[in-house]
Image (cartoon, rainbow, N blue to C red; front, side):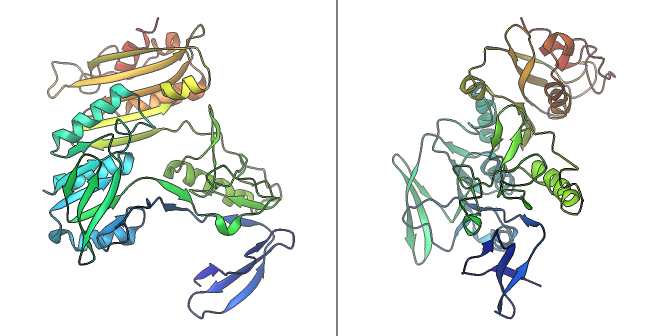
Length: 374
């Protein structure tokens, strides 16, 4: 049965009822619940600029939109992507590989600024440029020029870009307006605040995924729309809503771990970046090294860059970023585990990682990075 919440008081948390509309029959009805799960996801951020309603402008959040673009891909030769985060970078790379002329427009001064520190943003930008993508930073889109219902040009303060297709990859907002209630605690952007069991501030009401907050081990309740977190919270809530003890399973918290692939390169991050460490008022140091991904007498070796952020005094690892070619992002598994466990750089420097010439150097790259921490 396909259901959608109706237009009246959609959820009555006191009476434990949900008012809904059946999309097939158009009938509206009331149903009750013992425990309620809200998993309504998020909507793409669509800027309020002229031309954004044109038929060749796509928010890149739903499979339907992706399929429509794929079905018409032969008609599009020049593509403008607005937004230089995970999705914008990944989509620009894939379209460039398909032979499209791609321009990536980012309003901030660097790509993936919310995730990576400047050194790694520059490395990611270099990888994107290497794929033939034009990158414009510090450029907010002012207007989309429309002719016959389709955008033909994208205008910023400094550039006019001819285009056949516009993809919006600016970000997400939680789809939660229907659930709003003075009893329901929300973050400033409308994400529903949940505890480690997935329960909201209203008893017997749970939420998960892109509509909800995420428990970050270092930052607390934040909005972190990642598939990894959503999947784990889905499992936890699935157990708790059918359990006599609705707190029987609780989330250990995330570290905001993420990765991106651009052409031949990979980049990953976990824990705190420098901006986040500064916002928390932490005393920290950093180390940044470039070393080999495996022994140089084995074919196809290449550089891997690793940055560690660690606490002054204790030298406890707070964050890490990596960039390189083959197997660079695999290092994130060990680095994430180290932060989760509260290990220090002194300890990490001598961890017994696996070694064989095709996979590592005798001193694994993570050992080398940790041993440069002073």
